[in-house]
Length: 230
Length: 114
View 1 (cartoon, rainbow over the protein chains, first blue to last red):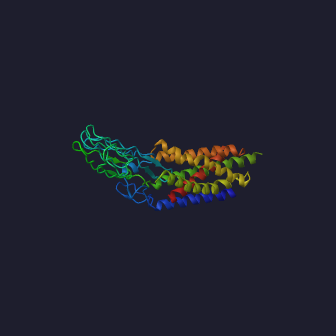
View 2 (view 1 turned 135 degrees about the vertical axis):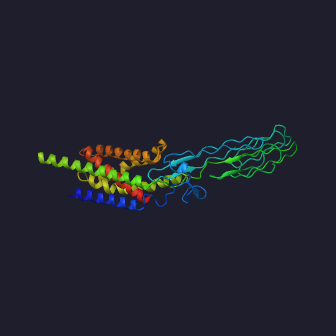
View 3 (view 1 turned 30 degrees about the horizontal axis):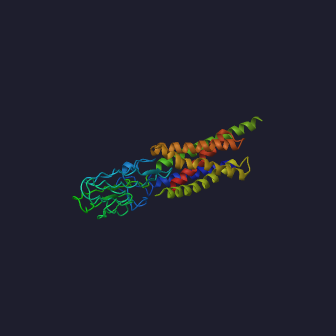
């Protein structure tokens, strides 16, 4: 009797939940799987935007940082990849930001390069009399030697593209070529959106409830038969 | 979202899953066993299945539909095996029924909350 009550309650619960999700037209209220939808619940800085290429997948997704863009005569390091996590049932794709690209190397003549945020020092130019990297806001190391030229401004916020560091001004030597790189972090837009179709989960949940009730029913019949035989 | 907040998110849904599955599975298991033993077994079964679903299986890189099937299959199978080993008198069929019913209910509730 108790088993029958539980089974009935479970069936009623499943039906109720099915109806509840169906009434939402198979769409979670906070779902945003359409490309371009704003996604206010996105993690990371600022609201996100759903990008279909990322939001439609469920597991880990590729959100590698783009390579750092070289300065005029410098070369940039690439940003490291972001890390994506996808959770189980709620289709929430998360991207952790990658690190910023490194600073560019200095130009061939003149002063050092401005580095962008997160980057390391820009190395001095080959023929630099007053070598040296620029002091960079957010940079980890200043350039060696020379006076710090006007620094590149860092812009290494996750999810946004860093600005090109301003050229370091040469103190002596030839004209400073602009070094610095575009610091890139992971492509975070499109990550963090909740995305999913509740009807998939509703169908699966219904199937699991059906399997469970059927198995319990079979088990019960077997037990009754065994009791009858004994 | 940081990794820390992801863990916090997992913890929240772990509690939800735990409550739902205890409510569904424990009464079914407690028919032949003491209630405290049934509740404990269900709680331990969640520790076995739930973290893997959140932290291990996503690394497989499956698409959402396939991921759902794999994750729920893992949850059902791991828990039914656990129940079967803990409760000697429990048949495989009944263990399957309890596990599938409990996981179906927690998935349905999670769908509503998500």
